[in-house]
Picture 1 (cartoon, rainbow, N blue to C red):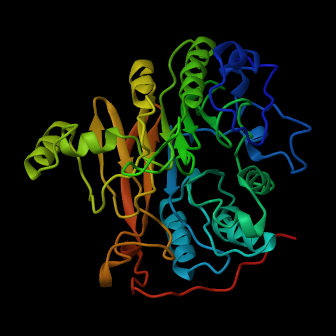
Picture 2: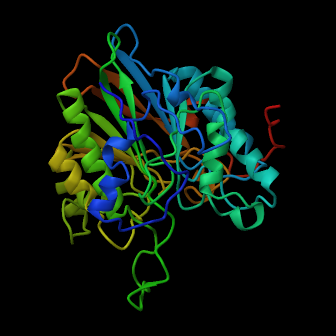
Length: 399
C-alpha cells in the first residue's frame, strides 16, 4: 500500500462543519494512513509513538487478540482493584493490543501532576508487559482540566510519550481529538487484514443551538458530520489503495441511538415483548441495567457503516452497567461494561459485579476476521467485590 505524503494532523481540532472542499484540501481521508510510518515532526515534543514505528501484525498462526478496558475513570488515587483487574485480564488473555475506550480519568485531580499520575496509573499494566495500546476519549476525561490544566490534546501528547502507545494525532479539520484508524497487518506480507477505527464521541451537547436549549433531551455529545464523512471517505480511500474492503471494528465512548433500537427491536417500543422481539431478531446477549445514553441527535454513523460494509462491530462504554451485544443488521453493537472500581456501578452490594473488560479474538483466515467477542469480569479472577473504596497512592511516573 502506498503511503500518503500529507499525513499531518493537529493534536486537537474543534472545527465542526468543515466543508467538503476544505475537508479534501486538508488531506481528507487519505491524510490518515496511520500505522504506516509517517510522522508529523512539529506537532508534538513527545517521542514518536509506537504507531509510527511498530508494525501491528497477526500472529504466525493467523490469530490476534484485543482487550477493551472502558471507564477506568478515577483520579490519581486509583482504586487498587482497577489495576488488579487490568493486570489479571492481561495475564490471562495475553492480548496483542489494548484499547482504553474513554473516561480513562475523571475529576478529582487538582494539579497537572495529579492528572499525569491518574493517566500513568492506567497505562502501566500495558507498559510493564510491552503490550501496544491506544486511547479514545469520553465525556469525563476533561473533568479535571479546570484545575489540572491539561486538555485532551495535551493528554494525547502525554499518552503518546509512552513506548507502547499507538495513538495518532488525528486528521486536521475534523471534530474531536485523536480520531484515527489503525491497521493490523497480516502474518505474511504487509497488507492490512483488519482495521480499528477510534473516534472521539465528545463530551456534552452545547448549551443551545439556534437559541433552543436541550431541556428534556439527552445532553451528551454525538459524533459530528465531519467525523462521519472522515470515516466514510477514509474507508473508500483504503479500499482504493488495498484493492478490497478491510474489515474492522469501531470504538467510541458514547453509544449510537441504534443500540436502543436493537435492544427493543423497535424505535418506539419499550415493553418486554419488544425486547423479546429484539433478542429473537438480533441475537442479543448480556445485561442492560440502565437506559442507553446517546446524544440528542442521531449522527448517521450507522448508516455510513451499513453503506460501506467494512466495520463489523461498534463497541462503546459510557453506560457502566450494560454489557450486552447483538447483531444489528450485520453490524455488532455492544458494550464493554466498565473496568474502574472508583465509579458508579450497580446498586448496593452488587455495585462491583459487572466490573470487567471485553475481549475480541480475530482470525485472518476467516471472511470477516472477527472471530468472537466476550466479557470477562473481576469476579472471574477472585477480585474483592466489596462495595467500598480501596484507593491507593499513585504509581511512580516514568523517569
